[in-house]
Length: 416
Image 1 (cartoon, one colour):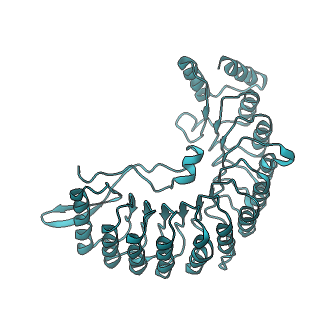
Image 2 (image 1 turned 135 degrees about the horizontal axis):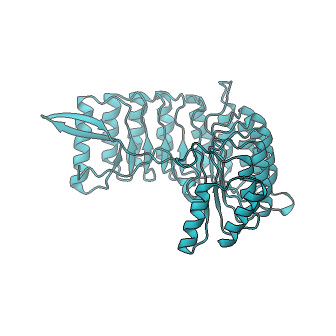
Image 3 (image 1 turned 90 degrees about the vertical axis):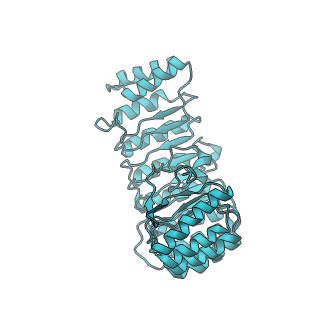
């Protein structure tokens, strides 16, 4: 560790830049523990760096110091305004340092050219392999060209396990080429977050290609398709032509789409026939009462699902009553999100009774974001206000492939 500290401070002197204070603190703490530093966390939105973000020459000095380092496996440089020049420096680092496993560049200023540089390094052509297993480019303007560069990279890369390219201004061409790469060539990626692409068509060509991919790819375990503008037909296509033939996917995120109650039948079929999906996020759609009722009817027949988010779906009395009844015959669900829907007297009472029944019968505690409570013989429902940890590159590769954004710490209603 002394060697790394000496090398880093020397490089900072060479390139006339100040050592990054949080990094020096982390190095000294590791030295005191007589341990090697394995994670470098320099996220610019932290309290320590918010007003003093990492600059290009500091990135350059750090990359030079890490050139021969065998111990640092996780590098977080999120929210630091890193541009294409900084990415070129990091790309060169990855060619030589095979120990790096996770690279977090969320919230920087990487353009299509930067994405191209990174993709060329990660292509692993001619048998040359990098060690990167997790790459986060969320909130970078890589655009359509950058998305297609990453798609071409996925055709030859054999080490990447988790890829986050949400909110990166990619379009339909990128969606199609990425889905095709995962359909035809790539069998090593475990988790793909491709939320919020820039789509100008309502034909949902991308959904069809992802359905084809899911019917052929038996390795992907987590897929995030939030904010795709998906309609009911797209949901039906995804379920009928993709998920009906897939037994690998465990996490499916369809939040913030345009699914109506017409998607209820397809989603019910998914829950009835699929035995692998453990996490389903349908938040911020418009499933309403009928959609919720169909999902509820499928719950007693599903033994795999452990986490379900139906928050903000315009569900009212009928749908909430049906959900309570469906959950009464399902002990596998561990976490449920329903806040943002309309609880009325009957549904409030039904959920109050259900929570009490589960506690009395010794059923597993339900992680529920709504708290039914009684005041003067009237039942009210309050929101359970808890910290919501983000599912991002801050987690290990395996965790990132199975977790989902809306999960929270369980609430034990037997001890209010």
